[in-house]
Image 1 (cartoon, rainbow, N blue to C red):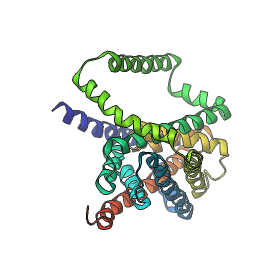
Image 2: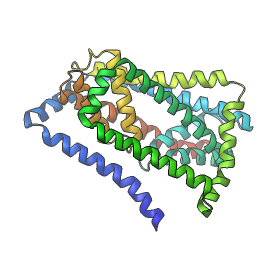
Image 3: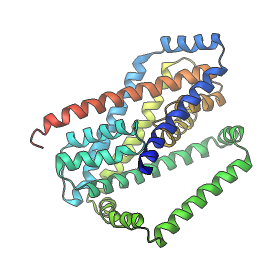
Image 4: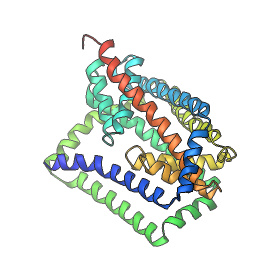
Length: 320
């Protein structure tokens, strides 16, 4: 019962937050501003959106190809097509239940390529760690390049006292979790420790792989595609087309954080994008329209690829 409640809360709370942010945002706009946003949607140059989705597809293919390097040291060589569709399904599932994509991705490989779940899941966790390092690197770069603007944006929304409290809560929560993991004899934690043995093998596969250079290259390529995917979209609207690369990088990491901490950025992505672009003198109406255009186009691509993958995988693996 508790697991069911937790599951539904993990789905409904991010959606509720998204709905609240949408209502909060549009409640502030006048009817004239609403009409302005509609006009921006109608007049946007969607050719740039299609080009951006091309870079998104490249990132997905590269992610699928990179996964093969992590699986090879474990003795598994799944088909690239299976890897690609597993990745697409993972992104699709993450839009429904947060973090369920990693599990579904490993399950796809277990079902269609006979790769043990814990080992496949371990390689996925390894990838996530690498991706998190890249995200942190881009955040650090953006803050370094735009420190004054970043400081102004944060302090406009959070006081120094609130930031200190947030840091304390994060550090305290992490410390308690670490202590429980090391000291607790709870059966659930003991089961988690046992499960981690398979995960560790997957994590170590990254360190023992023969083609580390190619793995790092694809990791870098994936994030370059992400940035290019975002950068190209600024030319869809006249109000955003003159943004500097530093501004694009700051907006990119803001959108990345929105997607990471919410249910695929629903509501939060356009809200935060419009707020950060406002710092760069982009009208809030244009920033909001831009955020929705980017989020909607990426979401439609993920939904289409995810559903197609669900349909095609059983056809390609009829005997499974």
